[in-house]
Amino acid sequence: MVFCPKCGTENKDDSKFCVKCGAPLPQSKKVEAQQVSGKSPIIAAILNFIWIGLGYLYLGIKEVRGIPAFGYVIIGLVLVIIGFFISPIRIIGFIISVILAIDAYQKAKGEKGFL
Ligand SMILES: [Zn+2]
View 1: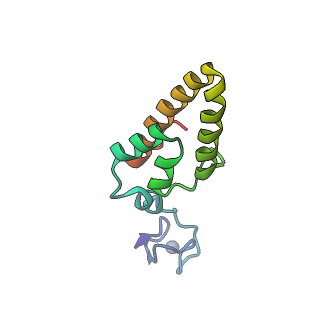
View 2: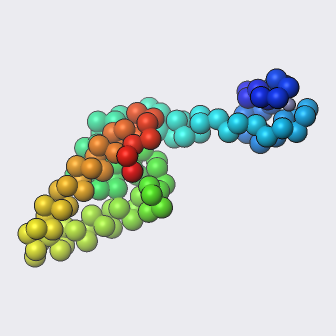
């Protein structure tokens, strides 16, 4: 249930406007939290570290910064292929893995993360 901030009437969770006074209702952040509830931050971090994007897929996060989760998986593949030939790319790939692992960890805990 979500309470109208104007008149206090109870409204359904998915309502956008109050049934009584028509005031716009605050969109509960429940949806976002539910998305990642029950998922282990550690596993999310490890998955994103092993292969970027996997942690997001595990958490059910569809996109981060406008890039779909599977996009990160593909970026990971590209980095691995290029990194096979150009070693500095491996270092960049490693740094990205660490950043995304921390981000997945924070997101799994229901925090915003830094991406
Ligand atoms: Zn109302």
